[in-house]
Image (tube, rainbow, N blue to C red; front, side, top):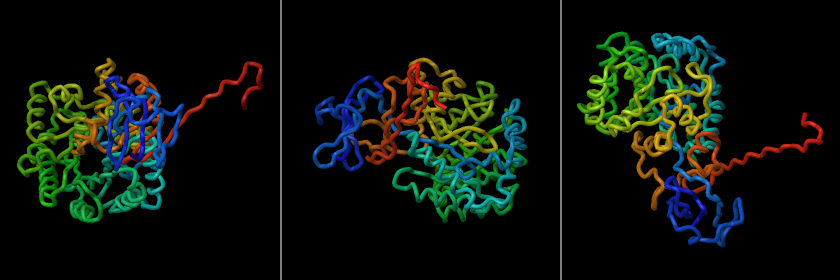
Length: 423
């Protein structure tokens, strides 16, 4: 045993002890593994560290299925014009916003990007996000600069955080000749997933070519595919359907992720259910980021239908969203309002959307609180689910691969009434 968490409260209310050995978890009845320390942390013989959870809620670590990591903290470089276009009205100007946001790539280099990427990954670990799918622009404007920066940061955090890189042709592949070749180069230089954004192309035929290119490349290289689909206020967009169909035809069943799919909010119910059936056949997972745009995927319906769906951070202070810190508990809190997930059972589903269901979307095995599971979990500074979501604070302890990698404490002092004010 290398680590012991005593008096840990599971989601079903049970209070247990969690022992960690060789990066795996073993669950013991309360008090069986060792006496609980008086508070905080202690040690057992052999250097075993003991964390006294004292009834705090313990959950799986967070999984972020969608983050544009190369562009974090760049809003000050492009201003609010693209942000206003993307979030305004019914998202009719979504394509315009992407075109405006491309200004951030002027003079873009890994030297400027790397400190901001480090900052974002540090916040991710602090808030217990230990798996992350990072979209990185690969196109003729940015080249591979973003990839090199994210690759360097990933190496620095490799012993704590799992970062999966998506080679993402943000400006299209038909619209941007040369982007396809750069994406293939990126996949030999460290990228893990073939990306796409087919709706950005100028015609339906070009969108179909975009999807076919990506799925053919993924099948040839044995990769997964992840695309931003139907991310605008247009019910005529059908690139989610194109992706699911191509996955089936190319033997990629269960190896694809569709992000946003905002236009599905405008589909008639029969059309939406037909698409859901096709997505189920393709094993297509979905990621919704309802806080970054006024339309969003019908998350509750997809959960009811058993389709893998998750929440993601999407953006951190960039041209599309001015906030964010890769805190998935905060993302879940926002989604509670935007998706109308407020009851006790709905709160449990919210937690699934950023932990176990999110892991399912990315094909991560064994991400659960169970005997023999990988020791990636957090001890929250809350005993109840409602408090976890209400506060969406950094966890008391974050455990990655069996090691404590982050600890957060908060202290508030109320001076006596007759004490001088604190300046």
